[in-house]
Image (cartoon, rainbow, N blue to C red; front, side, top):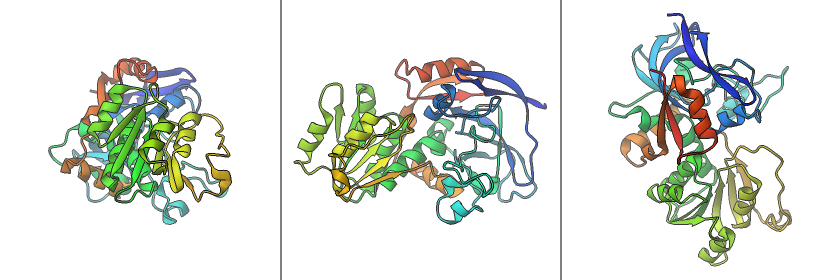
Length: 358
């Protein structure tokens, strides 16, 4: 077999299933047969034309699969082994990687060093919504899946879990902290779980969908607030005795959620921003304390690499976090357009869609 099915970006508003050649395997690559992948909010930004990619590019960046073929230089793995790879596939040879920022691996002096350089799948190279994906720098990025774990249990590790946990890590959460997490989509739910693992003693989850707030409670939220029913800023300030939260995590990418996350922050607190923004942000003068509040605003891009994936897989295998509830729907690859329609319009209580090529 020399051809495969793949979901490709055609133009804004159109992602279609197409036939593409199965990619040849270079010495540092691995060809992985996809068993399960999913659709991310970033893919919807691509679909809408809000994030530009080249026409004909295979979309998707969350692979679970089986090694079909290994490059001659890749050691320590075997064909037929179940693996995942992070959405971010750094080389660990770039200046950014060696400066401690592997997610920013990419670019060069002649073409410019661009943010998100480490995000290659479905961005700068063909992605995972296909029957096969070529994993670059495979020895640095492939992580074996522990026996006994299903595809659905580990499907969040490549991106959603890594990103949500990164938001909690970047928020500098300490044991006993009070944390507010704004938006309980898949990334926000993982940030809520991450805040619990980091030792927060009170986690306040905010969303407008009661079903998502119920899942947030299962993942570690102590208090849930529906912004359609209460003034969340007032409620959070009441809960903290007017002190504000030690850390707030913004997981949606809207002006309103960013502003609310800033307004509930204590002096000296950290706002950890995970949202992908489609327009300019405005920082309100009062909420920012005119720049005198000793606040930190930090952003994070999904950490990748095999060590990051190994740690996340260990968390899942230990039973400390169960993200199975995030997979709410399943489609075959030949129905990928229908899956995008469901996910992009957020119908039927969708959180994440498992895409099965076979």
